[in-house]
Image 1: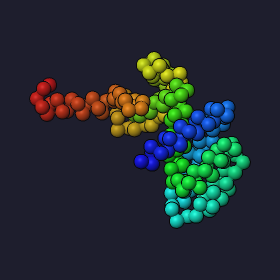
Image 2 (image 1 turned 30 degrees about the vertical axis):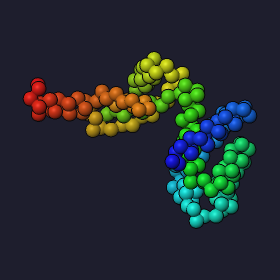
Image 3 (image 1 turned 135 degrees about the horizontal axis):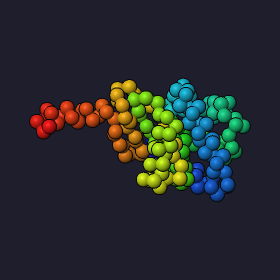
Image 4 (image 1 turned 90 degrees about the vertical axis):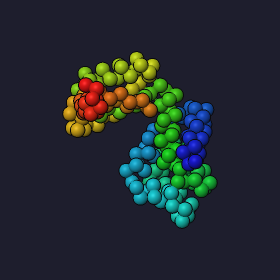
Length: 181
């Protein structure tokens, strides 16, 4: 339920910031908020804790972000905290970023490979994702996993393409076990 509420809050914030010509400022604020909370589990715990008084939560958010964020963001944080929904602020920031990226045609491609990608490989993946999904921009998030032996696993949204050697060996092993090969 909280992710639905977070999505609604994010949508409202996108609408308001678009109306106020502050969409880019809001995106920057939401990225900052997400990074700060993601790197500080105590802050997330305080925001989610119903025992911590609302004015204390507002004070902490003000101390952490203060004038670094846009007035709309300050008002939004205050509104959500005063409604007793501070626990969904982190999810709301993630939802905002996802909705912003959808509006702007930005796609995130998660690539897990056996070795670090070369610039040429990254460019190839970006071109492929742009072509297949009609994306305007592609953000590549890389992970290295030696267990793949070679190749890569590409994940964009809920779609996954597995071109790893480990996966191929696993399929081959299953086929041998079933007596197909």
